Image (cartoon, rainbow, N blue to C red):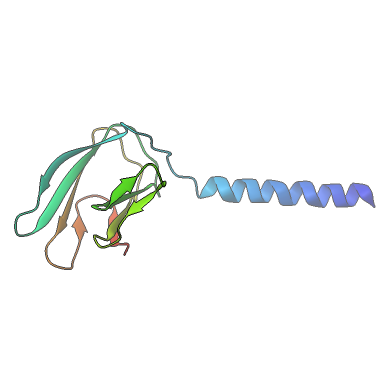
Length: 116
């Protein structure tokens, strides 16, 4: 009986492991992307370049809210945020342009949504 339970537990653990691996995204750290342009006139827009290869499903959040290192929290929530997601694997050197004319947001690579 114990062997059957151990086998079931092992199979279940492997399934969970591979399910988690299937939803993996690239872990980015400081210096893995660079902001290459910003424009706050009329239509807000900015662009960034990947300095590291990324996999499909990698998410990057952007906001104009400040960050307080002392409290480890955002300063204010009035600026909102954007969530960009890669829809394919992308190589370092890929340039992504984000344009926000009015309430719509668009990008030339991946997808982007208003995140609040």
